[in-house]
Length: 346
Ligand SMILES: NC(=O)c1ccc[n+]([C@@H]2O[C@H](COP(=O)([O-])OP(=O)(O)OC[C@H]3O[C@@H](n4cnc5c(N)ncnc54)[C@H](O)[C@@H]3O)[C@@H](O)[C@H]2O)c1
Image (cartoon, rainbow, N blue to C red; front, side):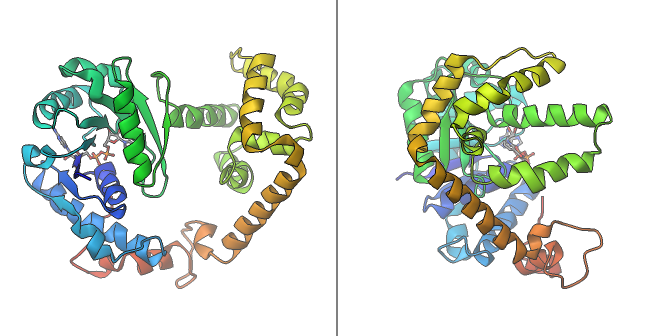
């Protein structure tokens, strides 16, 4: 297993370094700015300690942090790496210049992956001679707590590159999904965007206050979405599953879409495709068992919430020692009390 190079040591670069190092990989972390490089070193250890406090680290934080090697120039960070995760600022020109440089420095078979949230890989491809090894691997933030990563190939990315990226990301504990083609915002932000667009409209139209939107998500939809996707949710919400849900509710959802100028009715073919895919995971003949499982999972979640004051959320009026966010931060971030090893919150 060769080292992994992380290029850019800001929020996402530090977080990716933790993903790779936690999985046992040596990480060469390149950060051009001296001050940010020092912050990155502190940030890695601070975040690893927080993971350890929460029982989410199998090793001593110092041992994991020891595998992250910040420092050095770009050539020495990238040389010998089998996989390069670019984490530079979200600026297409900057990233193109960087990819041109990376191609000249990295081993010919190294995967060149960008963390970009919104720059499609095909706009990076013209910067390199061999675009077959360029793709986007877009994480959630922070990736060591949100395992999903969107692997987005351009039309010029080779299937072998996609498979190598998928394999490596799986091997470090991530849950990669591979997009069949580039779309604006990829999938994570399109789904988030659908919710946000509607939420803004509901507030604009005076239907609810912003805090009501957050309450619906936090106390309702989000509870199920903590362990089920939206398709799985409706499969288990309606006897007869997705097919029955679409038959009963499809027209109402179509009207809601039409109110917003959207015309994408759920056709029989679409519903059949989704239904077959969900049933492969949740066979319909065991529907009642799965509903019981969902309810048990909701109970487990609620029990966990009740014994975890932190999940009550940050509150400006939080009393000292309440066991909420401030108390948690004090436990996981002793650095804030003056520990020279950390405290670089970003
Ligand atoms: N922050 C998020 O929530 C998030 C989530 C997913 C993806 N991303 C993506 O990750 C990338 C990095 O975002 P971030 O939030 O970590 O930004 P950031 O500003 O925190 O970090 C970027 C780092 O890159 C460094 N840098 C500047 N020029 C560089 C260069 N030429 N080569 C290498 N490093 C350079 C900067 O000094 C800085 O430390 C962006 O493309 C962003 O869209 C961010």
